[in-house]
Image 1 (cartoon, rainbow, N blue to C red):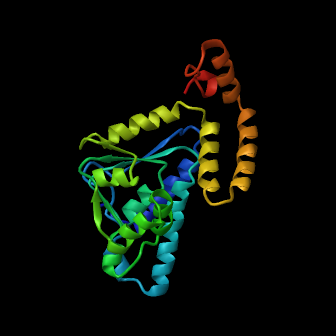
Image 2: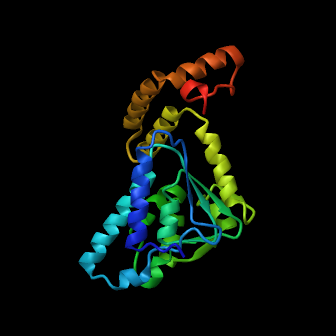
Image 3: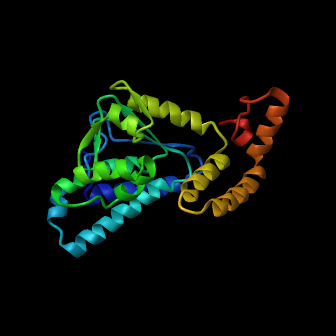
Amino acid sequence: MNAFDSEQRDELATAVRRLADARDVRAVVLYGGERLFAAGADIKTLAALGPDEARSWNRALQRTFDEVARLPMPVVAAITGYALGGGLELALCADYRVAADDAVLGQPEVQLGLMPGSGGTQRLVRLIGPSRAKNLLMTGRRVRADEALRLGLVDEVVPSGSAYDAALDYARRLAEGPAAALEAIKVAVDYGAGISVSVGLALERSLFAEVFATPDAATGIQSFLEHGPGHARFGENGQP
C-alpha cells in the first residue's frame, strides 16, 4: 500500500536529495504504481511510538515532504488508486497533479483521533481554500477524482490506466522549457504566496533579473525575433 514507515521515508529522502543536486534532471514524476499512489503513514509504526518518538518521526517525514516541494525542477504527481493521509500530503508537494478517474483522495487522520502532520493543514488550505480544506480535514471524508477536480485538489483527470503516461507527457513538456526560468517561477509562486504583494514583487524583480542573464533567455529572445513565439529550443547546445 506504499505506506510510509521509517524505511520508506528514508528512501524517499535519499532520492529527493539526489534529485535536488542533479543538474541533468529537468522534471520529476511522483508515482506509486498502477494500483495506488500511497495509503498514508504505516499505522502499525505509529502505534508503537510514544509521544516524543512520534514527534521526531513526524518531523523527519515533514522535512522529507518539504524537500520534495522545494525541488528546483517541476514536480508532477501521477495519482492512481488511493492517495490518503500522508499519500495525499506527498501529492500536495507536487506542482501539478494528474489523477486517474477512479482515484480516491482524502485526509482521514481525524477518524483515528489524529490530524495531518506532514503538510495537510498547510498546503491543502493554500490549494483549495480554508472552508473546503476544513471540510476534508474535519470529516476525514474521501473524494473521488471528479470531485477532487472540482475542488482544485487535482489539476487533470484522465482514464484509469493512463495517469502515469499523462503525467510523464506533461513533465516532458516542462522539461523542454528553460530550466532557470521554471525554477524561478516556482520560487516566486511558492514563496510569494506567504509574503506581502510588495515583497513578492521585489522577489519577482530579483528573479527576473537573474533569469534575464541566462543563456536560455538569450536563446528565447533571439528565436522569437527570428521565428516568432514557440520555436525556441532550450538547454545545452539548444537541446532540451
